Length: 284
Image (cartoon, rainbow, N blue to C red; front, top):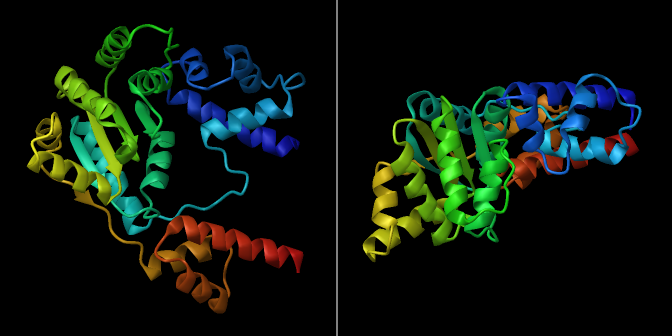
């Protein structure tokens, strides 16, 4: 790995550590990375750190070697405003929008720039214990194989002793009912002390509203706690796409319009198309 890449990763890691409670907590939040390794990177003692470890750190702290320029689209700004409001006022909200509308990117940037943000990207395979392990690790606490009840008590204890915490559950529609019920527990124990934002596609809205209609266990409680409202994200428009293209080095009108036509209002696809155009240009 090149020296300039290591310098960029070290700078990114320094910012990551600053947003955690301590350097040790930051190290515990990174999988497969010891506190000693974090210390060595921050102190410039790089000789014994393998390239694989550099990549392991880089992947977990959000380092992007492609230096993608993030534009403040309408969706990015709305998501940022929601996260700010939720964290500053300990609010509970649910946000829904199409895949590729910019939710996850805005969450990632907000978490990088603000202290006390616990952002989890949810997975279908998480059971209750796996969810709590992820949450504890993000809090910088080593999951010790305790029971689900012990782990939940530790989560609540950790959150109660911290100020201004925001928990963001991205892709929350992937969570099973058993895991989603933890949302109720966390809310009940920490109301007015912790902000919580659920982010997902429209499927979460339909799922919860259907659960309320069918009187399914827990769904009325979840619906009540999010204020009986799902905040919609704006659809990515052509102006957004053109701005993203221009910011990331696509300046030919023909190429930009080609990307606009092929993007299907999806910013992830825009990024893929821009990278493909740049790669082709470099080869030519």
